[in-house]
Image 1 (cartoon, rainbow over the protein chains, first blue to last red):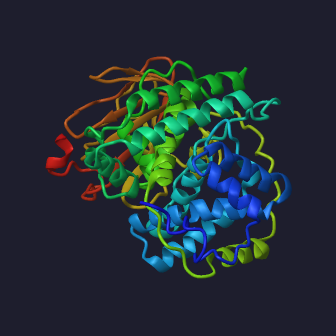
Image 2 (image 1 turned 30 degrees about the vertical axis):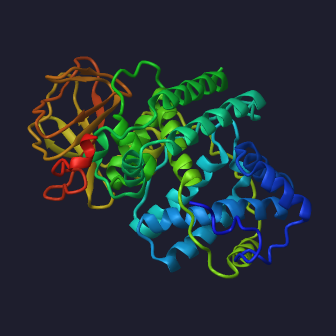
Image 3 (image 1 turned 135 degrees about the vertical axis):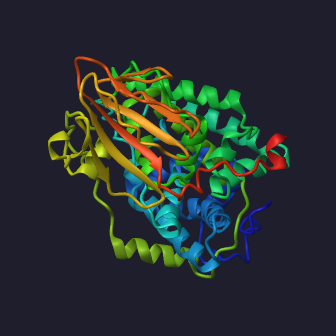
Length: 207
Length: 218
């Protein structure tokens, strides 16, 4: 489904005022996840509002759809989407492109907001790892993760409708624990290589 | 806190549900505690988060309200920029951080209640969809029958226990459903401390197997 915002003009974001250059870059690299990571780091490093506008235009409509599929009405979903995107700005310093793609990171923020606002419960987080003195994101690891992330997106995009529906139900909360245990059609090869990458990164960071 | 000797891990279903944010709080606590102790499940959880990201990325879009972007900027300007928070200093202890948060400290802060035969328990305060408790089993002792419905997760925090299924050491998690009738016995030599999570009595809807639906068999 095409984004209602991708038409360029006559959008709810018509007043954002992206520069012509930024428009061109977005059009060219719409699909490139690495660009979204860069945008988050531009926010982290210099509170770059243009980078934020690009992220907003791409992710806010997706986050809102995710929240609505999870059971929020349009008003609550809109409010939560704004909170999720504001959190992205405020927590940009916590983003590590070697640990998560932009889409993954934004998903976790939206997921947490969903638990607070819709389920009104808590989700305890695992103990944070101390990544050691050399915790600076590794370019190569960030790139490898980006590639895995694109592969997974392609694989999920190519799933038959019924399987995709099943995975979506699990993530939107319509599926019980036991039902998830059934075959979901997840692209296991890609998931396994993602796991290997994460383990390598953990071992590297713990050295 | 990580141990590399973990042999019993979380199921994909539990990791996926935790990633999706659909578990009762007590189950989330057990998952978070195990992941704190197990690199492999931490990595697997990262993969399930990536599936969530891919669903958002490739999923539908919803039309935003008029002025949504400006309203978000106003929220940001209103809140100011968050300063980087230094991670809290690493605490060495028996309990992994998520459990310490519920206890309000490490083992010495646990308010044990005897349940008989030397076994003690402490219920942790979570939402009512499931119950989380710490269990203290003296070395060589067995847990009295604590019949449960639905799913039970038992994570070893200290010591070890054996039951009819296997032997479980620090960081190991046993995922048992109602048809596993098990009697954990602590190893001789070291008192065993576990985090045990069960569906609350008569409230097992979220984890009860529903009738298998046709689409699951594709």
